[in-house]
Image 1 (cartoon, helix red, strand yellow):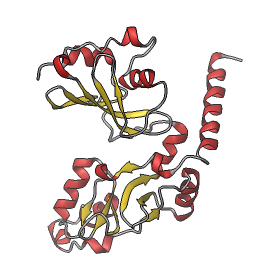
Image 2 (cartoon, one colour):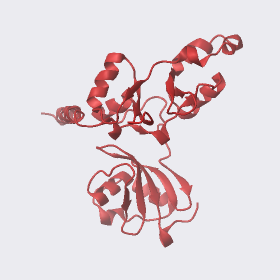
Image 3 (cartoon, one colour):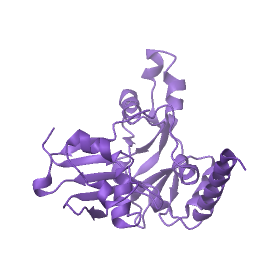
Image 4 (cartoon, one colour):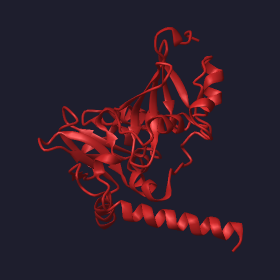
Length: 257
């Protein structure tokens, strides 16, 4: 068997295992948390709604009445483009958000991701709000989130080819993509995380946190670095860490650059 065939066989086995694992994986393990949901009120004007789509680089946005806990549906960018994007100002004046609302799925956080994927395929609805026992919104899941559990991250034409993998939130505090290269991060902010000593063959911040904790930590966990720095897990699923807040402690905090 050639190296290419071996690689293809390994990828097929990995995807099959991911499909099997989804039977036990819960929606709350993969959902976008409430704090990160991009939504718009049902009072939004067309220009305000278009700004939401543009700023978030999304194609579907949930719509709510007064708060996110009172959702009324979602709007697809394609519907707005066809209704108002080609007919000039007169068509835009006729904008009514209610005409473009599509129904949402509502699912409990305990639902298996495999079950939700089946339900989305059957209903042809690609977005679901995760509702807690009191009727409040806990998070949001798209069909892309579920497919990524099988095949890995999917980048589309709107994703940045080389996004900035970190940004400073406050002096000594950085928000980071877990895939950020450790060496590049160290060089950019002027601090050493001593990764080569702590873990062999680790190149990313997420890999370093995994090595320090000996597992994939859950969202909200804080992993302590031997030098006193903290890695707060902002987003993760059972397979990987996605986003981190790196907090450099005490005298080890780098200068505000």
